[in-house]
Amino acid sequence: MGEWYRNGATVDHVSIASRGLHYGDGVFETIAIRNGAARLWRNHAERLQQGCECLGLRAPDTDDLLQQVEHAVASSDVPAAYSIVKIIVVAAPGLRGYGRPRPIDTETYVGAFVTHPVAIDKYRNGIDTMLCDTRLACGSPLAGLKTLNRLEQVLARSEVLEARLFEGLTLDADDRLICGTMSNVFIVVGNKITTPLLSRCGVAGVMRRHVIETLAAAGSEVHETDLCTTELAAADEVFLSNSQFGLLPVKSCDDWHWATGPVTADLMQRLADRGIQECQV
Amino acid sequence: MGEWYRNGATVDHVSIASRGLHYGDGVFETIAIRNGAARLWRNHAERLQQGCECLGLRAPDTDDLLQQVEHAVASSDVPAAYSIVKIIVVAAPGLRGYGRPRPIDTETYVGAFVTHPVAIDKYRNGIDTMLCDTRLACGSPLAGLKTLNRLEQVLARSEVLEARLFEGLTLDADDRLICGTMSNVFIVVGNKITTPLLSRCGVAGVMRRHVIETLAAAGSEVHETDLCTTELAAADEVFLSNSQFGLLPVKSCDDWHWATGPVTADLMQRLADRGIQECQV
Image (cartoon, rainbow over all chains, first blue to last red; front, side, top):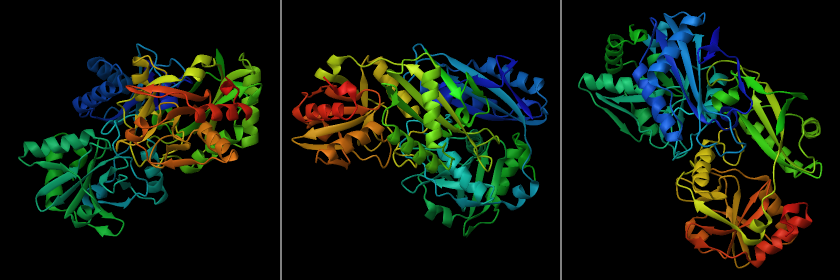
């Protein structure tokens, strides 16, 4: 169930000349709709703006875009209490070939869909994960952005589905730990919380930012640095963040096992207090 | 002018749920139609098969695909003597999210378009190029493939259009010379011909392969190896290959200049003798 909209009208197709189809020439956001509101809207809007800027595309007006999101939720048959919205901003069709027409216009599509919460036991007991064989390329000019070029995530995700797991962790080509296929990863040693630097590849998630800001508000710093599997294996606690599920403890990755420790539990309570209702366990 | 086809019928749109739009989950080929035939068809068909295999997608039957190409040229208003066909093979829509439905089906789109030859003086005197600021990420699991994830090329191509040049050369994040935005690059020192290794990033062009095979048939080996701008600057001759234009000498890249030398001239004649009519100068 769900529906796509463009400029307020339902739409079920895009031009076959779409630069999204041909080159992935655009960016997207997936936003949690909770209790009728677009959760972490400011984070999403800012990342979308930043992505458009890096790609040389004109970003949609943020206030207008929020209205489009609210319209999509209200007009479709999805529950405003708990659903998901995807925004796609894509370079308008033009010339054949990599070169864009100049000036370049953009098209914005907003879709609202039914989604379901992750089972409460996964929040309480953690999830099982795997290390994906698929590696992320390093030194991308698109590092950190949520562009429409997502084949690495598609391939890594295929491994995870094949293994019937909830999530997989990915390394870059130089053996650095980067993120999950659809989440960001944090490791805890004692009271120190670390998350991979995303300057070479990976997606800087809006919930990752919210976790960092939530911890900062509590006086804790998250260290963004290069990490590899040695640090992962030696961690006391490991958790993942994602705009939809919020935060989930990781209880295993292949043969490594972790408990849901006090730092993760404390953070979950803080997130629940700051609007991430799923973390109230 | 031009027209897209799917299963023999004209089509002007794809589903908004297309995994091509959302993730670039597919591959493509652009094929030169010359004198009514799909030039270097075997090379294109093999790369398409290889790309589908790496992506875990079912490739279309090669004979059936060639019929679709011929149908597109015959049915559209493009000249069979000189035009261009683009094939897109994309994972069929399914689940929301990176995960593909299993088993995964594919959709094949074939478009035929008018195109124009590059002016003869560019074959005789060479082209001016630039070094792009946009870098290619290293260590991609998609290295060599012509996937629908082409944002790096779009960004590099934007620089080239901005500078009003014909082509630009791109380096990877580790300063290696990789390719042009829409071509492969070769450098000549004396009689030795070298081209960048494409094991970490870049697209292995069908004309690149044809150049290598043409030289092999003449008893010359092309050395595939890591190259940087030092080797480029020190070259006696530089040339580019591409499925549409065949081969073009490079006369400059920013402040570096090269003559059209004897190795390039000899190769152009050999290519002309092996079906690349544009190289007959």
